[in-house]
Amino acid sequence: MNPYPAIVLALTLISMCPAYMINSPALLAKTQQWNPKFVPKQPLQHNTQHLLMFGRPLRNSLSSLSRRVQRLLKLSKEPSHPSQSSMPQYPLDPLPRDIALTNYNNRVYHCPIVIGSPGQRFNMAIYTGSSLTWVPSIHCPPEYAINHHYKRYNNDSSYTYHAKGKEFMAIYETGVVEGYWSEDIFRVAGLKVKNQTFGEVIQEPDLFQDMNIDGIFGLGFRGDAEGPTVFDNMVIQGLLPASVFSLYLNRFNMGDRDSVLTLGGINSDYYTGEFVYAPLRSPNYWQFRIDGVRIAKRAGVYSMGGCEAIVDSGTPFIFGPIEEVDILNLVLGGSPLQGWPRMVSDRFSFDCSKLESLPDVKFIVNGIKLSLSSKDYVIQEYRDRELICYSAFVGTKWEEDETPVWILGSAFMRAYYTVFDKENNRVGFAKVKD
Ligand SMILES: *[C@@H]1O[C@H](CO)[C@@H](O)[C@H](O)[C@H]1NC(C)=O
Ligand SMILES: *[C@@H]1O[C@H](CO)[C@@H](O)[C@H](O)[C@H]1NC(C)=O
Image (cartoon, rainbow, N blue to C red):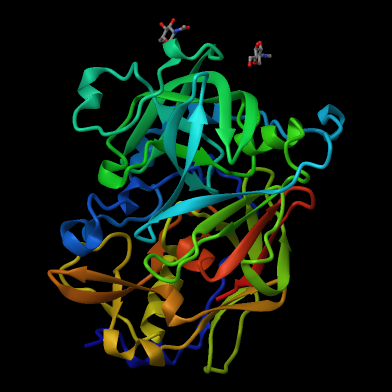
């Protein structure tokens, strides 16, 4: 079955990529991406075509979009962290807030947000890989509105709306989302956030199809040039006890607990044991360092060169450097999927009857091994009524001047409760409580 030489299978080591900071504009733009290719058009059990749509972070479209990238970078140059001095005293002990998230086929997690006065309700995909928050606008021209099921924000009917008079843009693999910056009141998890800037989008590709999602709730680390993120504003406006949020992502159709975003703290109902913390390594992203990736039960030589990583609730996959991920998939016993278009790398499948025997994959963070079992890294879906078990590990290629980054999507986050801690500039992981 396996076309690769057996010697490859003897490798016990997933070699490490060099550790340095994200500094290239191309990557900066790339890690801002939401990748709509991950989004199936219909529930996967009933539709096989869209298995083919799963992609990788932005690549090809970058060069042709470079001018737009430059514009975007210019727009988002000035970080706008809430500074200590501008932070008012908190009112009487605000408490952390939980908000339930809806899990769409383990692909996307979303929650409702109400914008404006009177309120207009939107389903927003939560995305820790980008700080941009946007909704479609009622002013979207008809040619972009065909087949769209989205809710649209109507600025004319909100008396708390303010125009910002500036262009908004976000770049995705399948296209560019454009519009203008607007400002209004946001209501999230019972909190009222005033003077929130957000993108009001008048031009967009049909990103979400039938998923019942309207826009994106950016929970990325850094604000944009037009003002603080929704989360930062909650902190600035004294609505939360701490500049911390945490995510519990459940497994689709398993168990009865909702996925939960906890704003302002950590909810101990969802994890067990101690947190492993990693300091942030970028002023822009939830980026940290992993010491390495290992496979269990295969002792050997380990290079501990280390590698950069980000946590990203906006993708179901775990992306890593292509050379390493191809080997990882082979060592795990995967075989390249036939009949699937080769993207940057092959997609790998496993024998569904042997999932139990697959080894664990361990990400080493701050010296501690965070294990993923096959239950975590194998994605099971029906295709022509046949169960397909394929790997969540997907290879991606980086240009020479780019820093390779592991992107730990929801396949990772379903196994590890994740805390995003701005108070201490770190991310933390604890085993999800079953
Ligand atoms: C709403 O947005 C449109 C398009 O930008 C603008 O022409 C209109 O004046 C805005 N409405 C209000 C009430 O400001
Ligand atoms: C903040 O929003 C309020 C209405 O909610 C508005 O009156 C005020 O002008 C806004 N402040 C700024 C600085 O835009």
